[in-house]
Amino acid sequence: MKIDINCDLGEGVNIDDCVRDAVLMGFISRCNIACGGHAGDDATMALTVANALKHNLAIGAHPSYPDRENFGRKSLSLPEERLLQSIAKQIDALSDIAARASTTLDHVKLHGALYNDAEADPKLAQAIVAMLNRCYPQLTVLGLANASMEQAARKLGQPFLREGFMDRRYLNDHQLAPRSQTGAVIDEFALCRQQTMCLIRGETFSSIEGKPLRFTVDSICLHGDNPQAVHIAARLHQALYEADIRICA
Image 1 (cartoon, helix red, strand yellow):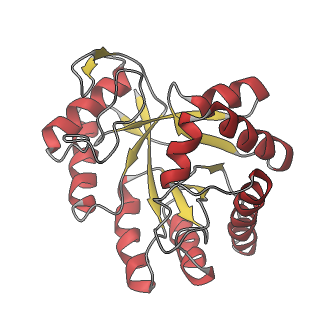
Image 2 (cartoon, one colour; image 1 turned 90 degrees about the vertical axis):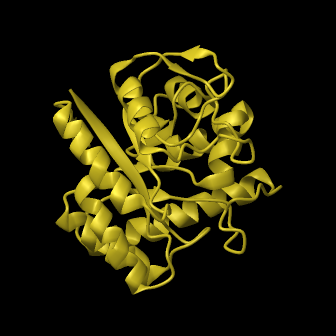
């Protein structure tokens, strides 16, 4: 068996943060690089792309609401056209840097509040995917399995990867439990490992409300901003190896 492991990177503020990110790259197969909306600038994008190439990672854009003050974790009420222009501007910024490194982007994954809002709102998801389909038809969308972005991508024929989370609990409707809900974040590695294996193998696991859930995903998200990210990544890498599951994009 095989599984893709993705991680949101380039979200720091200096070169030292990029060095820390590079340590994670040995344990993943895909990176989503912040491109100016919530974090990231030309220097961090260029260094993150260079490091990703050294590790043979699939490289993607990680656009967000244009809100560096709140790290893209606050929902913004923006006119649709302005939001779509912001997303495109962020993708273009990283695409230009990738081109200077003689590579191209593989995918796009929304960040933070924009990710959650698009997955919960079919109209917003449709608008975003329609723009991506029009302007970036070659980019695969990485989004939550069984939610609005997947539905919109399937409808428009945009390539899509179903994402699952090793360290987040799910609601009964397959949406992620909000971080504000008690128990929404799984901080025990044994439970992270168990949920990861269930998502890869299509085995049953429990929602945060105790309902049995069963579905498969194409990619597992590893949160790079967790202080224990490198430790978790190394342990997950070893656990997958022992289960004869290969990590690849």
